[in-house]
Image (tube, rainbow, N blue to C red; front, top):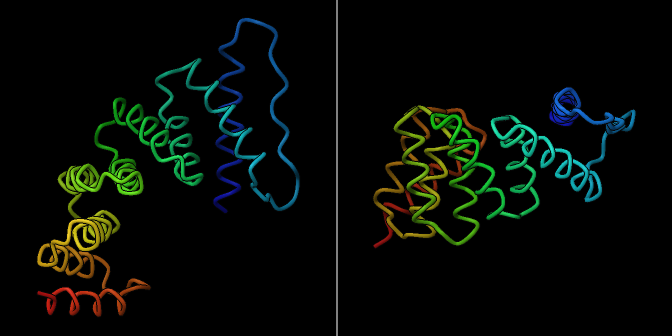
Length: 180
């Protein structure tokens, strides 16, 4: 389903870019029929299309977000951060983008910046489960603030008590609380 949405988003972006060009319109990217197997070449095409879209329309928040997502999925965390920053300049209250950017900061070796983004996201929406869990992970494993990490994991479980990882999180809370 995610791949179908991805394909539809790119088609919309291509159509938008095509409508705004004054020169001869380019043939839109032809998506393969059947199940889509996104590999390195597909990602490169997507990046090229999205970069063209944001070049032609720098306020195209959907293209910035999609570009950030592709960069994050490709472990190109600094480029993802740049794209997410552009999206947040358009919509600073986009909690999902803030959480994803926090994850990129963590993966880029900047846990303090990750915590800052997660906390900004949680100021906007205190009930964002992934924001809580991701904040707890960085606090526990990168910053070694076990007490605060345990609190954030507990808040995560309050928000989603039946989460698939709930049993594992409960065990982790106990480990954090018993650690010195």
